[in-house]
Image 1 (tube, rainbow, N blue to C red):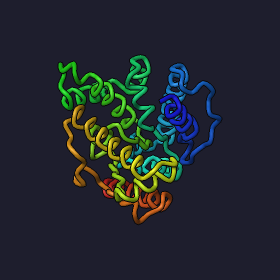
Image 2 (image 1 turned 90 degrees about the vertical axis):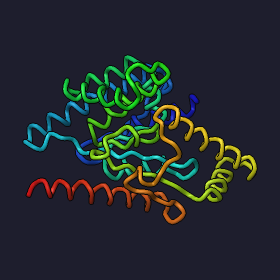
Image 3 (image 1 turned 135 degrees about the vertical axis):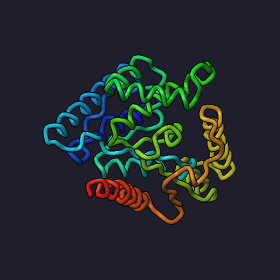
Length: 265
């Protein structure tokens, strides 16, 4: 868990939006420590504030660019695609582990919400209440997670991986992507990467996929992913990581740039 969280924080630390391009930053030390997460979020909040001021100074549309959510079958390479998409767009990548860590830390979660204006904060909390129910203590984590994802989405210019993000964001304000791959290819790829036998890899792939489905069902009432829950479904059997990311970026631009053009007419 610590190793995964370390990698996640390094990703968030190095991919940040800087005037339409990604900037490589020095990864922090002791990356699994809570204080490191807090410092990363504090820095991200400052970046959001600077971006907002820059848009206002240029008299641009103050609405930030919509976000992208990436849901993936285990072993399909969805995280690698999300990283490449963030790189191509110059957006911040929010991996599922960092989102989980923020959701569990009330102080960090509140700092995210505080970065929104009052109207946006009310909107986030009203949506989350409608999504999971106001008084169901069993779903407390889902509400915390929902607040984090919606706050990130409100700021835009983000690629959010996993954690039910596609079920949380406003469909009109996000491109919801699903990455799939044949079970055989996922098992073979995982076995090769991890040095496992086919039987061992099969067990990990199937159990992880089942756990993800159970998470969505328990917290958001969403059963096994349906293609109609997404705007774009990519079959990795026919794409490498860079090619798949290029398709996502093209779809994102085609959808939201065309909507902006229609609105300006």
